[in-house]
Length: 197
Image (cartoon, rainbow, N blue to C red; front, side):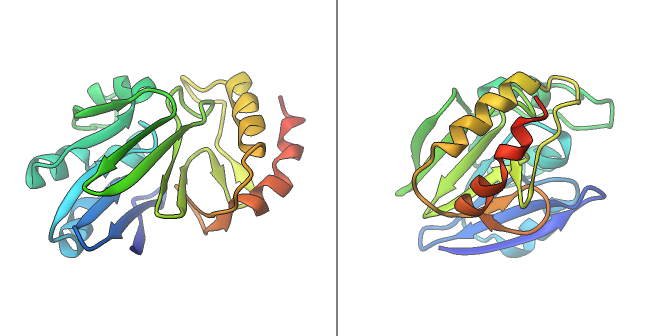
């Protein structure tokens, strides 16, 4: 599959589009992402959210209604999509599929795996597709997601880091902000973050 992405909004949130033979999968359409997505996507299959923060889901409603395609979101973060939790003017969106914990399903014939890594948010997840891992705001290149925000949990983040450190395979890692990395590279630096908790 071909991967393209662009940073969106003042938080420079990465919106990803995976293009395959059957069509496109959209990941985390944030603030202002709708126009860029419309310019790139001709045969959309689904919208996937890694978690529910506004800068990752801002364009859900526009694209879901424009394309009439299913929206997937971690179950623990659905409440953030349902209301303007942070009072910033987010238009609510309703997931067609609430992914409960770790989950695996097909979008067309493409296998999609959600890995639940709570801490940054209750539902925070990474998404594996076609040998790529989209880590949202769980793990960045050289860093991790904040745990001092409303609905964050430092204790859950610690457990999620320990879970991530147990992954045996290496994959390219594409985070919600900043540059790409790999699972193994981030596994080499994550233990120092455990000292925070």
